[in-house]
Image 1: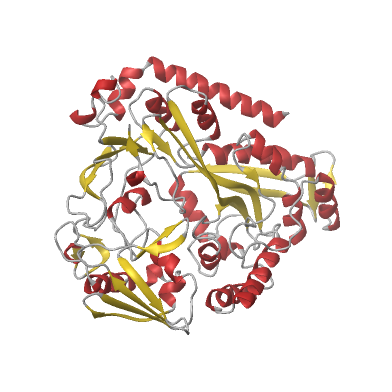
Image 2: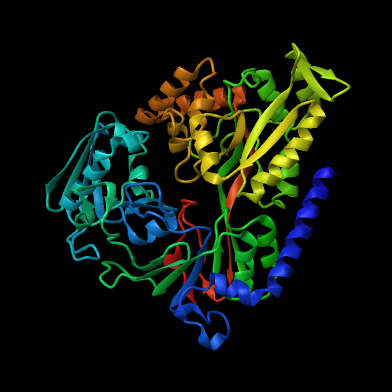
Length: 545
């Protein structure tokens, strides 16, 4: 009941904020409208430019160098292309018209599409591919967590339109890693700085459907159709990406017609999605499950080093109530690390079940005895007290944290929660300076290989540090690599069976829900769909009618 009261309180506060913002609409418009071209956007139907889509993001597009990780993925996806692309039907040709794989799985030969140029006129050919792959490889320390980089044995332009990559060992996810938004997308060699890209680029020149024509930092960016694009041009000629950090102000801007679409789980909470689903003049879309929303527990922590405590925490989490109470059923409860629909993850596991009785029994077995005076268990004079961090910029993480703080009192565990600014929060995670923090799998098409592969490398996310207290951590990481390099499907599945079963039994992760991507938009926006990658926004496929 306490949890439900908090949800109702949050909802009332949200509605009050929207009402207040509506009363200050003139001021809100001046803060979010950017440039004379957009000053009257949404005022009348007659003034709407049907060739223009106004998108919104919570922050600036930042550094869009396609070989680094600092830029916004939706923007990089508009500008830059790769050899292959990921579709619902699997890996398909893109800048490579086709490819061959040797029988031993060590050599990939790509046949480059002819007649393609970068938006600065530079020819796209096998030599441009070689220059870009070399630029990525030049920054090996930054990309070394990618198995495709670590296993790369050589690459070269065989001739003008043939490019070859050689691997030290077979690596079945190679094409997937080449297809995702970064770092294997192509920028004109004319934009290289000192012959490479690791220290930055001098221009954002790709082969993509759009070019960046304006960027007003922390205000808006303008993407216009690439006039020299080699393929079929999109129907929307101009995309304006506004920056609106606040969730409620973004929703109000959509309602007032100042923007056309909200897209992404970080951009739309469940309340906003459901509210717009019932409003005339707006549409909503929901993707299939994409990733696992979870917590990660540090096995090197004094208290959490005990698997019984980790299993007790898992048993004390009511995933159904989180699903219904926080996500209104939009995200299904997750009783295991990876959904059985993820490749290689249909493993026979007994899913985590909510049971306060089991949680309390596990803590009793671990000699944590209840102090009736404080309501907190103790062992050797030490209270059962754990610190949990969350991203203060995420309303969802704060709400879940507050809920779990209440729930853990039922098992005599004092959960202290602290919200931090996003960068500090992420730095803490990478450094392993946490007891419990939020985590998420990488989602399609990165799961399971990229998510599991990152566990093997320090300072990617918090997984490596959190796993260092596990007895079989070395075997776990070795088996992850074996799964990647195996050419035998049956053997590969056996490796995945061990990996997922071991992590499940060690209970180092606390799966909460299976995340789904979502979009809310003005009904004039058509063909709002989702890419296999949750981090891409298929703006190029949308149109206005």
